[in-house]
Image 1 (cartoon, rainbow, N blue to C red):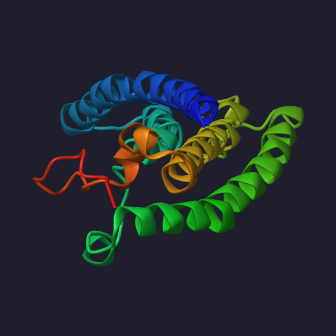
Image 2 (cartoon, one colour):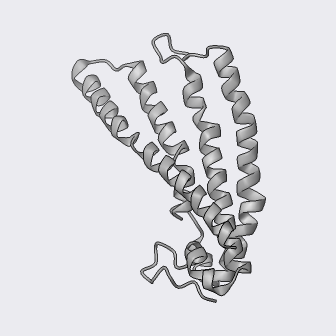
Image 3 (cartoon, one colour):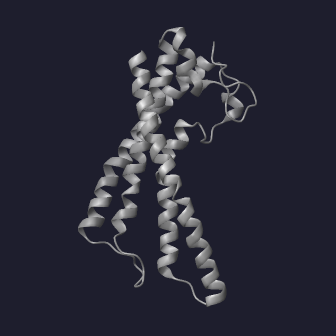
Length: 194
């Protein structure tokens, strides 16, 4: 069981580093938006390239941060129900959700995403606008990469929940932070005992 937690921690580390690195896309995104707004307001015209760069940066930011949001438990939940469940029940529901929803969906998106990117690369796809950006495959590649990171996060969470449900009680605190008190609560996150 200790080995499963080490694998999970390694996956968390990869997803977290990728998410933190991708979050830096917010900085050039802000500058591009500010420059575009100023250019439109005072320059009298906008730039198609700037507009497309905005949505490219925005897409990259979100696609590459989904997994990070999942391992940090910062995604949307039905807290009304979840917060009233015992930690063991939370872990079981999380495992079932991961196996039945997260991982199959990620597998489909990754499978079809690679073909989506390959077709874009092979056809030298560019913007439909005459003055738009080229190399459309670059932004499309964030789809399979982002869902690959999300799948890795899903496996990591599954392993932690598995250890929490089936592992020894001395590993509950380390494995069960994910099923403890939710981040929106003011309680101690270490409350994971049954």
